Length: 220
Image (cartoon, rainbow, N blue to C red; front, side):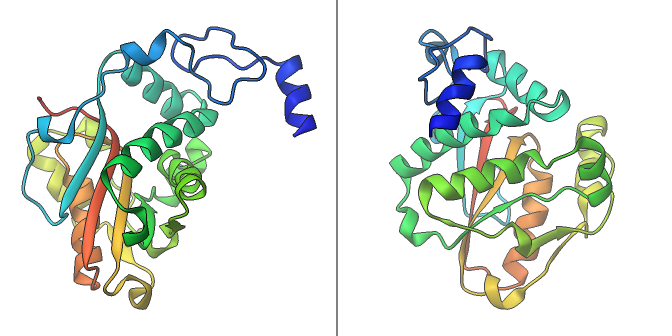
């Protein structure tokens, strides 16, 4: 605690959204002004598509300051943002779910080559911190990406389902059977990646899949 206090004094924390310098005692890196600018959504505002997952929890619309922060988080080495994202997600999850009914948090895996190039899996960083905050067991080891697929964002929406088909496998079916799984990713657009992950988890015996995402690009 003393080391953290000293480091914050030397390198004051900054708001992840506007970069404003914060008080060195700040527990969360968001300034007082930015929460009102975050485009939070209610889950019933989302135009849902039927798939293999059972429920969807979405924090924000993918626009404005949240979109800019996610882009920096994923592509500009701002891995520390995961702590703020996890705190915001934990608040939403604890308001809507009994966390004791959830057996595992599982992040959508990156292929090892992409993870090596980026230096981290952004979804796994969030799921690890979310596990610490909520007490839900971290189970990302249960799902592995076995195909180095093309980036979904670069493909026409009609090709995205084909791109991720058979791209994932369950690594331990016994741990998945009859479990309720919180499947986490950063962004939901067409939902094909999350749907394919849900499919293999369901086929391995998962009882229920609750998808949770930071933001959605779907029309509200």
